[in-house]
Amino acid sequence: MWGGRSFYEVFLDLMDSHRGKVIGIILGLLAGLLIIIFGFWKTVFIIICILIGYFVGKGFDDGSGLDALWRRLFGER
Image (cartoon, rainbow, N blue to C red; front, side, top):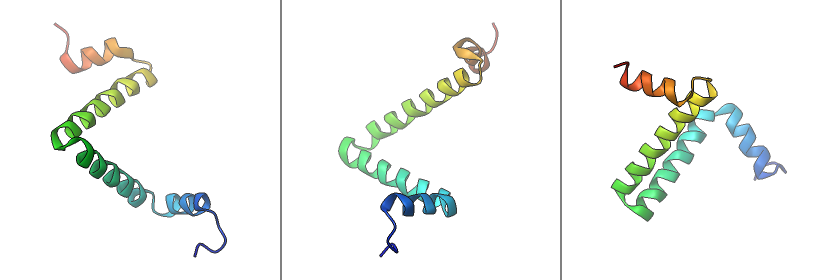
């Protein structure tokens, strides 16, 4: 079926040639499972928490830290 290649090799080949589609399928599957397991609103809350965590982590990776992120979001007073 896969020409003697392992699942991992096929997956890497798909990621090289169809990265957006593969990531979209994985995220869609994950979202569907979360909605089935937890319900719609709890899933929305989980996604919001993930996005907040991503942006806070991105701020630390960029070297700006939480203080600069806070100032950027809420401005100087």
